[in-house]
Image 1 (cartoon, helix red, strand yellow):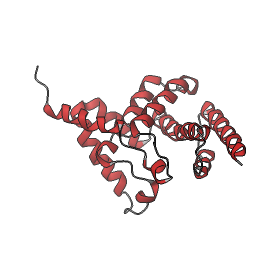
Image 2 (tube, helix red, strand yellow):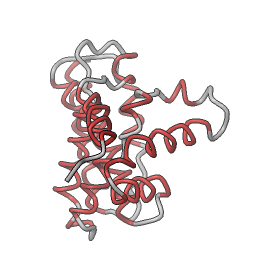
Image 3 (cartoon, helix red, strand yellow):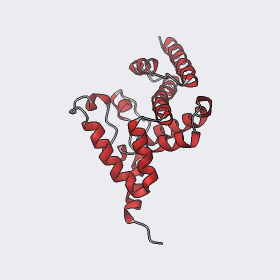
Length: 188
């Protein structure tokens, strides 16, 4: 059975996620920032830990978490400040095109998962979106415990995460905010 060479090219492109840094951390002066691949893995761990208590199929959530940042293999990690300067819908359109290019060779299932994620129409997709945001809080706590400072704006982001419909995620959000406040008090 001969394989489509585009599959290999897609896998190579997706491999770049292992070394591409998360731009938000770079812009805040984090010297060795988390990579997109590390972020995606962190989201998957959250999904594994919290899907069942939230009434979500863990395997589906992990699969959605796997594809959610796939377009960044071609686009990089655009910070919110850059996305806000683009015409309305431009980032979403570019991500859809990149997803089609990098995921299509991996099969219909990969593309269907991306479409579900992008539409945010299923409970599993919404659950993964909250896990995606909460992972930022987990990483922020790690950075705070390493003594990194100047990242307080991310605490505001953690406080503002909308966890409606997922009580266990709300508990985690509150715990993260409390621990981050404690770390901030230690530094003061």
